[in-house]
Image 1 (cartoon, helix red, strand yellow):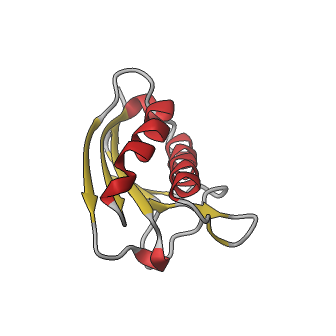
Image 2: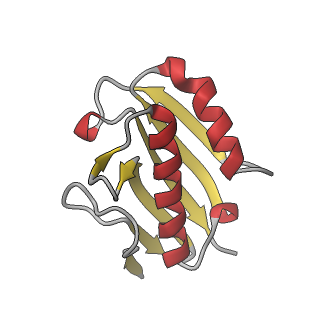
Image 3: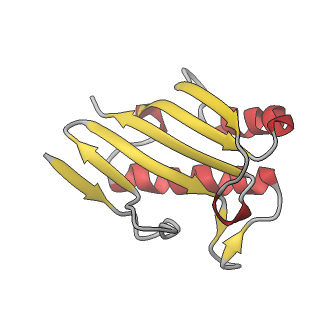
Amino acid sequence: MNKTITAPDAPKATGPYCHAKQAGNMLFISGQLGVDQAKGGLAETVSEQAKLALEGMGKILKAAGMDYTDVVKTTVFLADINDFATINAIYSDVFKTEPPARSCYQVANLPKGALFEIEAIAVKG
């Protein structure tokens, strides 16, 4: 059975999609951007965007009764692959031990002109 997960304190989706879908014990998290909710738009730097996107992902995980340790796979999208090392430092602060599998790509464009986006798959149990 599929269940829509919405985290009320996470930034709203920028299109016709939900924060996440839960299918059994698996959670599929939509791409998260680095939205600064206080300012009402994207954070300015790739570092700030990455931190905020990962925080948003954490709020979605919590809404599903999960946390970062349940994440098994992430996909990271960067506007500039030269930000790879910067992102790794921030990423390793969130996934301190036994990080999930990950792919990372430079892409031509991201929604709203973002510099960073992350999506994830988590499994409970």
